Amino acid sequence: MKIVRVETFLVPPRWLFCRIETDEGIVGWGEPVVEGRAEVVRAAVDVLAEYLIGQDPLRIQDHWQVLTKGGFYRGGPVLSSAVAGLDHALWDIAGKAYGAPVHALLGGPVRESVRVYAWVGGDEPARLAEDVTAQVEAGFTAVKMNGAGRTSAIPTPAETAAVVARVAAAREALGPERDVAVDFHGRFTAAGARRVLHELAPLHPLFVEEPLLPEQGHLLGGLVDASRVPIATGERLYGRAEFLPALTAGVAVAQPDLSHAGGITEVTRIAALAETYGAQLAPHCPLGPISLAASLQVAFCTPNFLIQEQSRGIHYNKDADLLSYLVDTEPFRFVDGQAPRTGLPGLGITVDEDAVRAADRTGHAWRNPVWRHADGSFAEW
Ligand SMILES: [Mg+2]
Image (tube, rainbow, N blue to C red; front, side, top):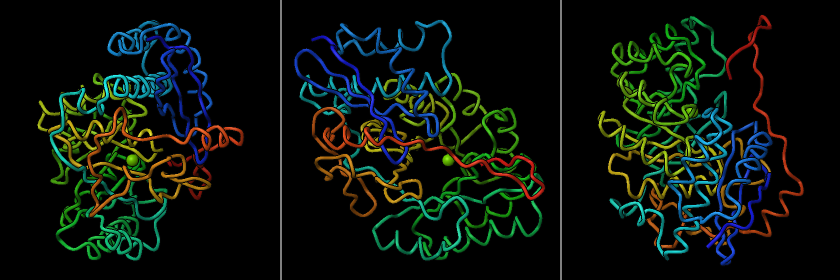
């Protein structure tokens, strides 16, 4: 079997898909994207595809080596995301060629369903209690929310109190049997995070995510030691080597993104690395259906898996949502907040190719907002 064609599709709301076609008619799908930089990743996929044309798609490990290391300059979000999407598609092809789901090829299932959480609130959440109650009624046992919008370097008492009040409102709507995770989105300084984490601890969050920017990873250890709140990070880390310092610092939860951190091949390695530190895997996935399908395949066969993010109804999903490009939506029909294990081959989904091709004709130009503080200076989004 040989790869004969690699195509990319820029589809709303803010995604990029890739499709690898073989001379035996087997097709694989992937989702190589950096949110807000989709066109740049598309160009990177085009360059990497030059190598893949004519290759045997089943030599995934070898292709991963060449795609990540064969260009001398390596890593970073753009290249690692381009490799990630191609890696999804190669695993999808392998599963279809062997007639098995990807998780079966990776050692077989360790669980029959995967706990997923739902997002509540937007970037600056307001009607939180209502949103949480709606997700509880939909069956979810965990939600995630943003901790705050734009935030002062040293939070005022009012800013700190506002974060605590929102998380408290979520906790009250959830009760003690369900979980709330809180995303700080790298909007806090170390001093600010330390102050707010202390106040949040009594509300027992499942974890606090990205309390610091990735470039301040050297401060993570101090933060872990200063708080009893489990710390999560990883959506802006792109491989094992970048997870190692975070795991050494003692983070409780590793959050690689299947579309950013080198795909299924690298995230399974990150999971194994995390296991040696007693850390849990909770893949980041505010993205599309192929990225989620890849995440679920990893979750089905990863012992130290905790919970899966998914984007259904997320505030970013305008003009299209998680189910818009699927022929069969059953794999993402969550029951009691769980995604059922599927025995379907490959990634376990059937992409609606006509819908994808039509959407690509429209495309998108999604960019994240640029935030500023009241004095006009730049604020982290
Ligand atoms: Mg996040």
